[in-house]
Image (cartoon, rainbow, N blue to C red; front, side, top):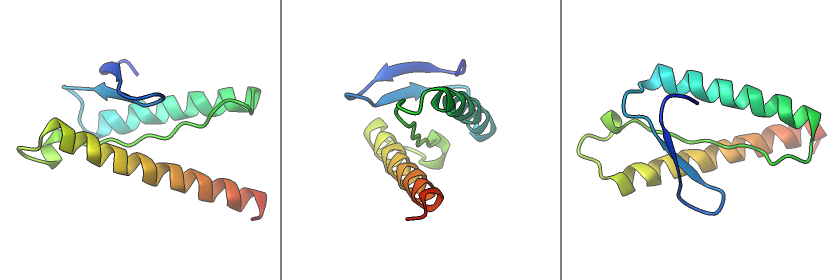
Length: 93
């Protein structure tokens, strides 16, 4: 996304540390990435879906990196659930 450095933290999970980003920059970056992935999925529907969760350290003063990662992970699972509900609604389930 051009605003941070990506690190693989699990099989298919990545963490992007963006030390200079604020909420507006994070939202804009994720909007760009999501739009790109949506275009790619239209071209090849077999591509995996993308879910994201993020948080800002300023939201958790004194928060540890594991606590920040746990919060971002919680938000990612909420994003996955929202995508699933949207897909089910489109499919009429």
